[in-house]
Length: 141
Image (tube, rainbow, N blue to C red; front, side, top):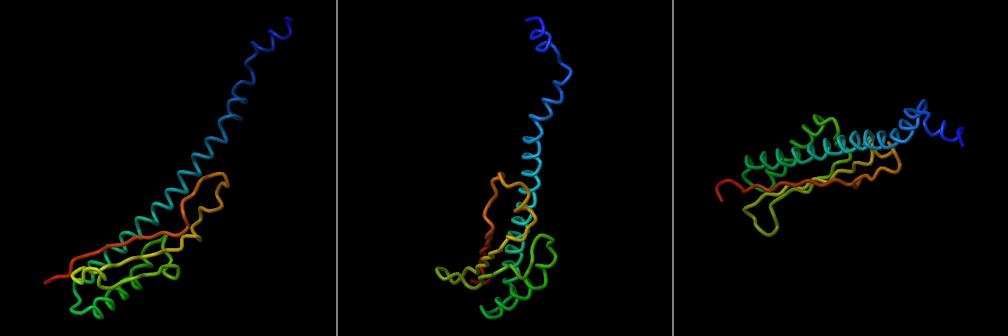
């Protein structure tokens, strides 16, 4: 009985046990913060690109000219966002079908190559398809 009570009172390995219990939770939190930080950075970049593209459309006099301006803007500026690969970006642009006084830019991005999908398998991750959009009223209408 005295041997058992001596083992229970022994605290020499308690910090090693605490470390072993808390380390997996700590790494799950750490990798989750990194993964979602990268994902949110890409999502904000995508939304900013959509908003800036829609603002560029104001300079166009016709839908064809607005589309050319927006296409050129996306091609030129998508490379400026480090988490966005232009080859994986699809844009749907044009006058809004329900309201021709509105111009719409919808971006869809395949985020499957972001460096987060293999971080930690039990980590719940968002969709690999990201979408963002912006609509702006055309000037003079």
